[in-house]
Image (tube, rainbow, N blue to C red; front, side, top):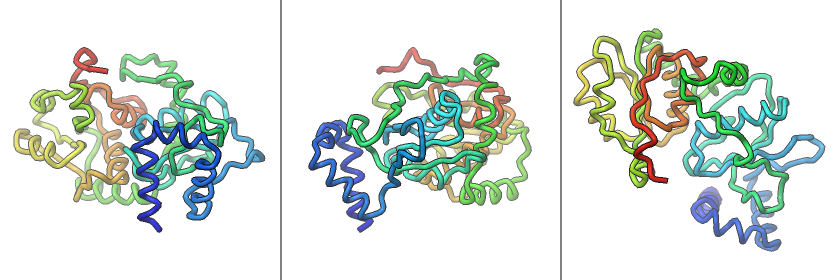
Length: 291
């Protein structure tokens, strides 16, 4: 049953645009509703819950973007409750509640992709929300103050916390280290967004430990070979695990200094989690990007 469920989810993700049109059709949409009820693949919306609307997230949205949308939702509606369509596949292959605990808030999620025009829910689409692109220390203090409370209440789940505790106890890291995040997966390569790894390595201090978070073991191997200082990475890192990725973000957030890929919302997330205190060096610029 899990294999069938995964195949259907993958179909709805990979063919989202096509599925979006077909799911509007009553018989097909009703089939997926019935299937989700049968398999427990969804938490269903009740009008009595009085949510303002269902926050609609696409499977292609990364973890940084998803959390940014949630932060904006809470600020816009001035509420402590959210119902979110959070597909647990695509870039983020885990449910929100497997990754985070949002203190003093109620988070209800449905872990599948639902085209926003399906008519199934009253959707709040991410296109209606503003972009809180931080620009790090150049961001207005007012903007930082508005979202400070939300990110302070965003805590790691028990599974993430276990990873964090194991790493921090083993390496005894204080805040006097540099966080390095390199965003260079194949989707950015097609858009000419990659920067040479040497640019990141040259920006690193050799007299302080560096914590590395990246997308694959090949990148990690190149950095480890060419960086002459102390380089740390999450132990037994699984590059497809969102538990490991979120643990990375929380470790990165504790660093005094950071070297981040331009345009990465994952880096924005780490910066927010650290209380917007990091001194950030950005590698890359929008000039090279092909939309």
